[in-house]
Amino acid sequence: MKVILIVGDGLADRPIPELKNKTPLETARKPSLNKIAETGICGIMDPIAPGVPPGSDTATLALLGYDPIKVYSGRGALEALGSEVDVLPQDVVFRCNFATVDNNLNVVDRRAGRIETSDSSKLAKALKEIVLKEHKDVHITFKNTIQHRAILQLRGPKLSRMVSDSDPQKTGTPILTVNPRDDTPEAKKTADIINKFTRRSLEILKTHAVNARRIKEGLPPANAILCRGAGTLPIVKSISLLYGVHGAVVSVMPLIRGVCKVAGLRLLDVKGATGTYDTDVVAKGKAAVQALKTLDFVFVHVKATDVASHDGKVKQKIRMIEKIDGMVGCILKKVTLDETLVSVTADHTTSLVTREHEGDPVPVAITGPGVRTDNVKEFDERNCARGDLGRIRGKDLMPTIMNLMGKAKKFGA
Image 1: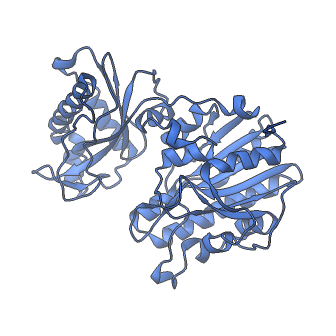
Image 2 (image 1 turned 180 degrees about the vertical axis):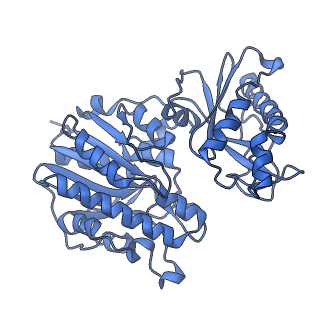
Image 3 (image 1 turned 90 degrees about the vertical axis):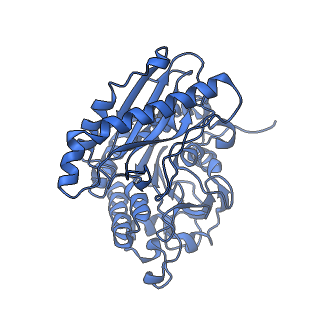
C-alpha cells in the first residue's frame, strides 16, 4: 500500500466577517477535497496540543510522528539543512529575515516587502564576506533561501543555541539585542557573535547598490538582518527505521525540507514549485504520484495558503485553497484508492484576522483501503469536527496512517 500526505500550510482559519462568518475552507470551491472527506474518515487535529499555536517546524515534526516537545532543538538548523547547507551536530544555526528598518533601527517591515529572491541573493553575497576579528575561531555562513528568508550558520568551538532573538517579530520596535538564555560562556559568546554580525550587516546593507535601486523604485530597502530560532540538529530515528517505509517530500520550503530530511525522506525538486502564489501545484501532485512508483510514502507541502493569511489576503487564500483542490483532483485521477491512502490536513491554523499562527485545531481526512467512512461530506474545520476520527494530536496522525498501511507494531503480547 502507498500513502500521499498533503499538507496545506496554514490552511485552517477562523470565521471571517466578510465571508459571512465562514472560513476560507468553508467558502472555497473544493470538490476534490470534499471527495476525500466523503469517501474517508475525518476529524480535527491539535498539531501540538489544544490551544498551543505551533510553528511550522514543530508541527511538521509532529505530523511525521515525532513528539516535538521531546525532540525539538530549534528551527535554524532545520532551515539550513533544507537549504542544502551541511550541518554538523555542534553547529548553531539561526533563521533570518531580510528586513526594513528606519534610521533609529525600528523595524518597518519584517520581510522587506517580501523582497524578490534575485535581490536577496545579491545582498547575501555581500554578507558572506563578514569575518569577526574577535571570533576568528568561528566560521560564519550566511545564505538566502526564498524571498526574504535566510540562514546564519555558526561553526566553531564553545557555541550554544541558548540565546534570544534579535527579531522583535513586530513592527515599530527596534532590533533587539541578543542575550544569553543561560549563564554559560558558550551562550555569552554566541550572543556576542550575533550582535556583532547584526551591526556589521547594517553597515554593509545600508550602502548596497540593490537597496539604492529599491529606494529609487519606491520599494522598501532590505537594510537589516533579523535573527531568530537558534537551533541545532534534532536527534530522531528515521521513518524507515520506525515504520519500515521509504518516502520523499515535495516542498520548496527549506524548513519543511529540513525537517523531512532529518526524518529520512528524500528531497524532490519540482520545476515550477516556488512557495509563492504562482507555485505549480499540479506539477507537485504529478511528482508525488511519480514518486510512489518506487517509494511508499510522499509528503506534499503547499506554502502559499499560509502566506495569504500572514498578508491578510482573503481572496488569495481562497484562490490557493482552490489550487490545492486542483492538485488533489490531479492526484485522485492518477491513483487508485484501492491501493493508495490519501490524507489531507494542515500544519496549523493561520488567522487572516490576526495574521498569526493560532492554537485552533485543524481538519484532517484520510481516504483509501480499509478506512472506516463516516458521514462527513465536506472538508473544512466545522464539518471535519463531526467525523469519526475524533480529535487527535499531530503526533497521532502518522501512527494512524501506518496502522492503515499495515506497518504498525503490536503493543503487548
